[in-house]
Image (cartoon, rainbow, N blue to C red; front, top):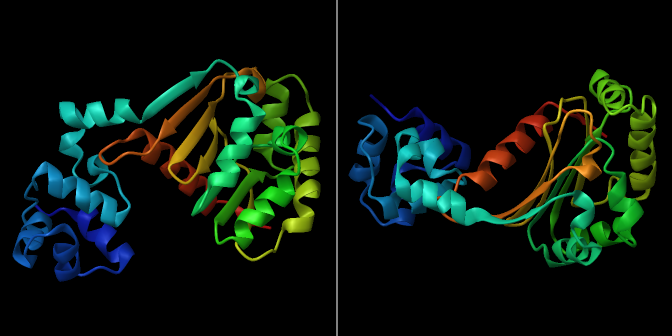
Length: 245
């Protein structure tokens, strides 16, 4: 039985068997056996391979999910729990933005708290993009059924759509700047996601409650962990199905 996930991950990265072997520190024949015979690498090699390919160990080798070491790594990713979004200090949001060196990914419906609460939010995002940070902003399509339904569920009706329009209007001056990508989504969200390099905050959604009243999970990516990658896979799926602005 072959490991098609590993093969596909290498293809996505444009990496050959020899190149992966050099990166991980094993000979090409060993890598070939991982693929064609689904051989299980040693833990060190699993973690390094996952890091090189940008995948989780569990994704590449699903049988490791019950491994106590994998579970321990996932627990180690968890940093803090905020009972509501409002309990995350504004200074922390500013630090997350200012300290990002590679990636900022934002997923929400309206996300109006970003420009309402964070001073000069648009200017800060623009500055990070000019510094070479890849910025992806993914907010709700005001005309989508998902946004209308969320407004009904929260008891605010058309206000949800209005918040989405407000956010897009606020962001208009920086849309199209180099390094900034933006898309409108009509997806059902179970969590808003705010990613800054290896830091991720997931604002979980509770039926009938506004996002600001719901808890936030704060996590940091570590090798062998699953939580960070699990949420980012959700972001990527939403991104792929969204409409460029």
